[in-house]
Length: 448
Image 1: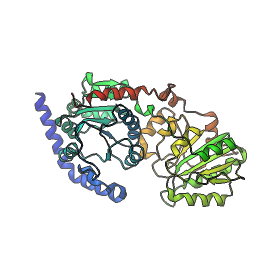
Image 2: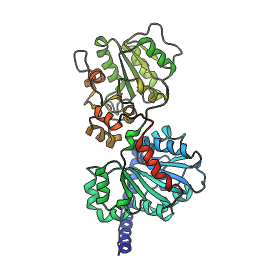
Image 3: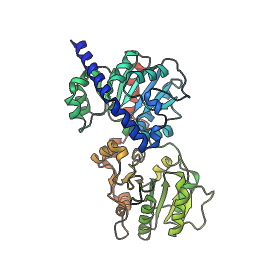
Image 4: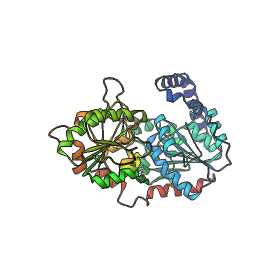
């Protein structure tokens, strides 16, 4: 009876995919037209891999991360796996363009390849499995793809869900289709979830009880950057001894002429704050290198004291309050530990926001604008925990009387609930991370 039910569900899903294929084609064309980046490496979504990939011996681990939050979670897992077995082939697939960009930046040194995952059609999934020959496939968070799960098990691979989560919004939809997902959720060898509530939801949807375990949330085991700030920044801090360090991270121009230019908004707030906060240091970090010179022009025109990080020495006349223009790439994460408060750019302008997990890992007060569409799930979690301060517009950076939410945030507000989630243990302990890798490890040889 069970096999008949499974066969009927597979036929139903096949029919749905056949009917949906024209819509899928139009969806991909629409995404490619809206964002040219989406068309790059498009063949990977059909199971093709970059030419740099080479057939690997059996025993690889394929880890799938949906977007930025999962990529950040994956970094610790991959680092721990590398420590245990430096030679094991590791591959990471990422669904979104933003997630792919972060993966290229954060994970390239840890893995053998990064690619977009195949669409949930057997021909595409089989091409990937044949190319990288994994012994274990690790799915981060909530990605339930029937064909992927089926083909992974048919190929003799172990299948694990790690950091699993089913949100309040998604659970009613999953429950309405329980008859469908029950069979799919029988396939994973282990389902490691974030909370007891998530465990109960997986069990209600039909996952076998022995496979489900609530171990905590990997996102909150994220560790701060181990890199030291640039030497000239350390020298500047030692010389000026600012009372408040405000980092405006990854600032972006407006999406159109009616939108906010975040460099303008931040500099306007700084000019209003400076008279009342003479020990304030602003570190301005434009997202794109092509905006460095434009940002300097704005600083020069405003008349504020500033320096570019690329200078070989600190100008003799530089004094607080002042601005450092970080005109370099790859150094922002090393500065979060010295900040009092971080404004995450791309969120006042309609750009969808940037990743708040790195400053959160440093236990810093975080301020964002209202546009966090690129990180909606993370933003929802942070809102629920009161883990950042979300402002409605540029004017709220410096509302009145030389005070501001930014400076008040640095002085009087700290992400206490988030600190509790992060825990008071030393970062190197990371119990959820260690436990997850410990559960993955026995499956790396493909045993079931």
